[in-house]
Length: 485
Image 1 (tube, one colour):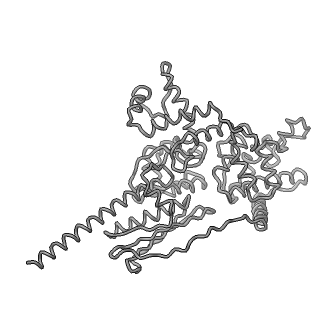
Image 2: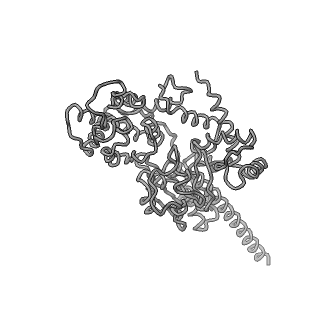
Image 3: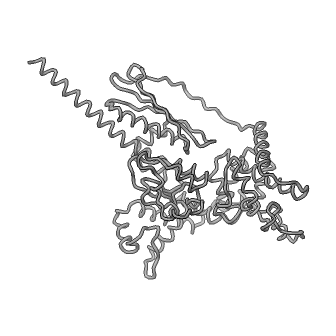
């Protein structure tokens, strides 16, 4: 009926107090609790001792909710450990999956950033992390101001913790072990995942297969043995080494590693920390885009189809041929079963000249979700529409349209300041970007570092504008005095 779990909801409420201690360390309550209970460490590292009060114990119990979704937002990277702290925007651990490389145990995130250009050192990223992690980390925007690192709530668009979001995430994490159906799931925690599955653009037989996989009722050898079915052996059909459980067959089998690595998703499931097949599958649904999920479903089904061919027809396994087969079948199905797309009608807009004496800087960004890249463009025109300057730049790693729109705005402001233009206006077609720049509310979203840069650069532009007005006034006064004399 949708009733909340009151214990989980109470913990989510207590987590709100912990969030305030993190975000408002200068408040009287935060200073008092820190001086008494954790004077030499952070709130996330504090421990409960024997004589601690009931209030403090309660707040610490709510901290478990925060740990499910808190991660660091990279500023200058000086206070974030590469391997120990949560900072990579990949649920659920937010830590790198790649194995620790010798000699890099004490690396800080600042060591991965080029301080001169305020960009990621791609050669170092490619050496330390997997290709999927490299794409994710390289898409993290960096501030030009060397701002401080800060903790944000990953599961909110603005990065701010709310009781509703905290309850949902914690409740889902607690119930992920119990694979309930979408209609019977406690509190509807699985509703989103079932919607992603049943709305996927894959054949119906693949959807039914995925339902069985998540429910754990596929007839793998381990499951058959548990059902008292007599089998010659329980070994994996592909590697003939470990027991053929669902987790081993689809995630941990070394023979199938090349299928995932060289496929369109470039996954390395063996290094993923998930211990069960269902938790790994749900984690992938949180990370992958809609189109990537389609191939993920098709890839799992292709592995099962190939396994059955080897069992019943003694076929040979060829990973690269299986990749090509899965991609071809998915493309053919989507070709004859296209998704219904509603085209939004946009009112035609006409560019207008700026007021006399003022330059107009038009900025725009573009993003391709299928490859995770984008680009920006900036055009400067005077009050009669004559082009003054322009620039364009590609971004090989990006995470959203808003990311590119914000980068374009920052580039336009930097261009104006660099050229010393005193009277300019910035024009963008992104209503979300304009609203975020004009809003005075706290914003810890993925693009908040760029937005903060834009706000400071806008202040500098206003100062340039004011300075230009003062100089013009002085010149006019001098001219008038000269004429009078």
